[in-house]
Length: 471
Figure 1 (cartoon, rainbow, N blue to C red):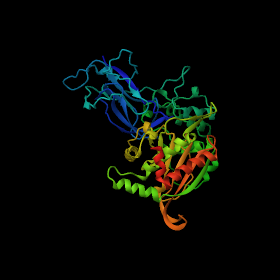
Figure 2: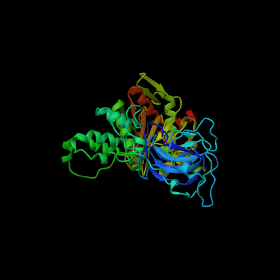
Figure 3: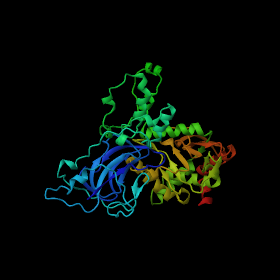
Figure 4: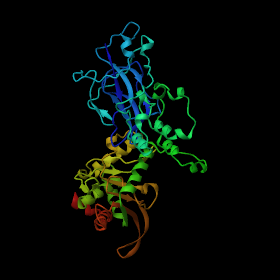
């Protein structure tokens, strides 16, 4: 007899607590293979195909496309076990067992054919098998999505809360989560439940029947967004503000807002800048490209200059451990670079940039940029950076004061390279000039170190031959 296993939304890494269902890749009644992607979700970091560690027949899905689910909430249930026998009508034998919604954990001796155990944090499993999309037509209505009973009233035991945001909201408003009845799957307490509890004294009491809605009615309902929370807790006076378009701070926009706010709150940053004559750098690039081979981008040259400067000034390739009150200098340079996409600003990371030459850096930058445009970057490609390069010159601007990409210690900003009057060898001339800006964490170094780093970058831009010493 097949047993029904519940697959929950896995930990997406980097503090991400929820994801939006973009597209289901399987239907109820469909046979799935071990490690087959079953749903495409969008986090604040990337679009991710989530593979299921079980092989069997999908008996239920939780959540509609466009809805948000917290990490740990059920995604789907799969009937697994001995090979399923099919009747002449195409139904699954012993359909009654497929109807069960009881969550069963795989035993230690579970065979690899039905459970891989390889779900990794955020985005995949090891040794994924080829997709198999065959459909099993249910023999009876029992194969439809299982009916969920109303969430039971709790007395004692663990509180069904997954999201730390929910716990924080409850703590800030003095709510005892044990007294709340969750409206999520299996009684899961959602942010909407906390918001409702906070607002309860200010509105008429709802009929008991309306409060005790079945949990199944909420399983596919989108979770309340961060902007909804903000509106719920906005002072009454704010209601007199002029009406206008409200854009939810969620997804990539919300993640960027949180990270930039944290950077400004925690990091005592300072910015220094310098104008540099990039004429020789552009001439060197033209000579490289005319020699044949892959085209060399300005960004690749700037990335190589950054790694050379970080080798001289490793203080800027570090992070601050506040708990231990220590500066952690990092041995590897994982270079992030800002990329603007239709979904918003993302910062892909070039791993081990300090070990790459210009051609290798250019190839990886091109690959990650294309993945950013198509929305196929994985969480691993968007995290773990140690220093960020921001080429805002592509937007036609000369300068900026970059905000550090927390928890890094510095960011180099590069403006547009444009012809300007410049004193060259004692005479006024028209040269290709660029403004370079360095924002740094003043806790990890003083202005002398930051200035030394920026000056070395400028020297390499003005005299690319300086790079020969580091090759």
